[in-house]
Image 1 (spheres, rainbow, N blue to C red):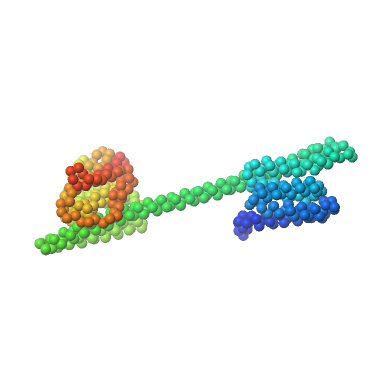
Image 2 (cartoon, rainbow, N blue to C red):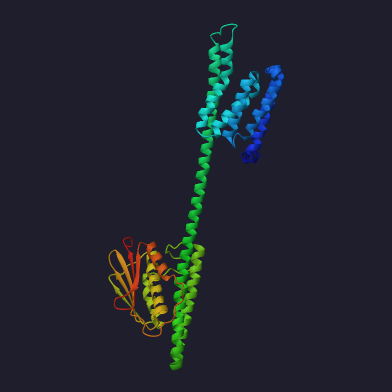
Length: 402
């Protein structure tokens, strides 16, 4: 209940300050009617009390205009109605405090000077024009010391409040920046996750469908000449389809359970493929009709799941691109070159040897390969080979894979 009331007051400063203005007006009227203002000037005091209480309503939303208005009213009242000091005392002090607390830095010095001068001007005139008795030893300390002390106290409290307000604003700004940063990080993570899912779906589904399409195209010709060969092709299509279905299920389980492409085996799905599975991949593509061979140089060794999966996916994507862009009759070579600190994967086709299927537009395979390699400190280079055809080269550092 208290927190709700405080929040409501912070959201409606004008209403709160209007209540404060009403209280100050009540005190000024009470002091005036109780005789702290000469009876001859009580009417003037009541009018001045109403006028100087009005700027208090805007003391936080418009501190400088409100303080200037209050200062003008107080100055006019002091000059023309010297006896109305009790009616303007508290509103003037409140407006000086508000100018220091909520206004710009220069407002603190201006408010201090105005409060001090406004408090000493009338007593000083009285002292200078008095012809009765000379002032006592305590007259000057009272006339100048007490207003100075009041002005210093108002300046001190206003400065403390100003520091608290600035600190609160800084904390709110910091909280806003932190929230914006958190939202930006979440957005970046979501974009990265979407990119990762896109790569996985593309690599798994596109490769399997390309293999099925290539086998189906070959089966059309085989059915006319060798029915048994057509049966073998259909069996291969069925095998590829089952493997693709299993890959998709494993991918969905991986996304559901872990959601992180760390290359680790998923408990609910199948282990992620790696460099040891490239030979089986090449054999699968060869059985689908693409004349592809595998060459390994150097000494193979275990590779971390993330890097191994990257090598496997790059070979898979490169062979899929051969089927889509060069055709299923294109001779292709896959090479794995192992060194002490690097694995180089090369996939090169010799160019189309027959009718080339029209590939679909808008593919993201090359982008996905480069993104995968970059995640593990590697790089992918693609382009035409000088001897004809197309070449893909992947370089993966293996310094931590010992």
